Image (cartoon, rainbow, N blue to C red; front, side):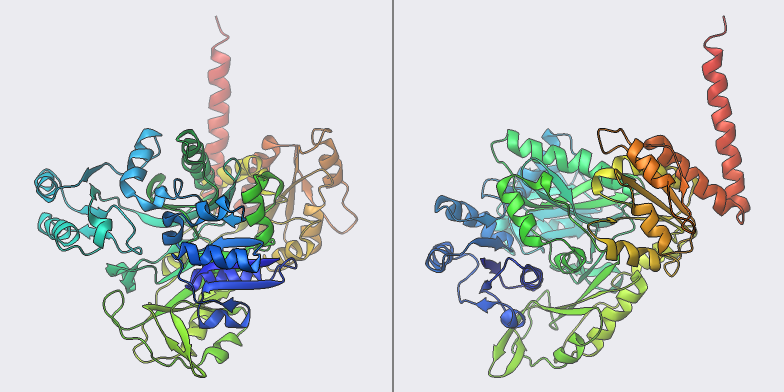
Length: 591
């Protein structure tokens, strides 16, 4: 296949890198590309928004598949132009990309379909906006309606700051035509997270969670940028939250867009604000995030080309997205002055040394070649991305890569992943139970175990690994389980159900098997397969389905309680609650 990737940033470099791993791919082009892509793709000098130029190139070169990176190309209608010429292209149409192209549309859409978001008002006249501010209580968020490269959001701590923000956008024309209309909305508090999913307009396949770092300075201080780093997974998003986001946010959005005559295909990115158990949508993006794409694409093990094509063809339900359980971290190296004015043309040194590090990839964002040198050409220059057995190792590897690279005036945040480390290091937040399942379709059942662990205050990690499709990854996950701090593993699988055995064969930790109903035999095949482990490979077998999953969680907590008096007390409370429930039910039958 000949594949064209549209864009020039770190996101597009990561796409090219991932696409290059597909056995289906013969040649990759990138328009316009950057210096880092040149070893694996041919860069062509066509702007990402030059629709006529891109279309002519794709037709002339007989491109089999085009993948769109930046939102500007989507909002301009690149997908529509290619589809009109019967060219295969991954991404939403112009009508669907309005979810990112207009914040007013999106806020009204969210309200219409009862998708949780902050209260807001939209304004086209500066006087009306300033008058409305007098009724608000700070902090206040002021947003430009259109595209502003991730910078069109201002959080004002006072009414005066909010007035200045309105003037800056509407009167000062800070974001051009994007600010002709603005939104003023309540300021949500909590922790942000990014939730991305593939969709073909019907089926939704969620990617691992991730978290971006928008502010320029450590501690989330200073003005917003396009993103100074990201990591995956984001522990602030629990498995229960994942199910909520899919059911209450993504599904209504995909269904609602179809009902509006704007069918959505491609990547759907929900920016979330999480405050305890409360989740609100901050924004939608219609493409991979940058820099979230870098750590996410490093974790995806499936052939990315298969996923792109399934989204185009409406066959996503037939595709399984396999994910490496290890965490990843991306640290952005930026030009001095960014997100304001900055100089370019600075020579970059140390790229080869950084790339030689185990588990490290250096994705270029704002670079170009001048003679034999790589120099800076943008605000965000590089995204040093690493994978590790745990989050701390991934962070250490990423920053080790950063230390090997230098260009005059380079700047980077030193706290990427810090929130996650604090969360994991907090009381009861270090995962001690691992939940593994053969497919993401098993999540509704395995959630019963996760819910019980949540109730008992026991931290856990959850992943997907197949004994048949990804045996090496399943084995690696099991082998490193103790190193990651796990003490018990719960494994759920249907049909042949060899997953629990594979896991037990590669770890000395206790393994609890949960047979799942995934065949016409209603789970009896999985039950028998899980029970019949060979000598020396013990697996504690539960009942089939949700009841068995919950009992797996209960048994795990009972094992942990052998050395934890606090858990003993919680189990006693749980048993008392069960007794009370039965007594209440029995009382209904007493005359």
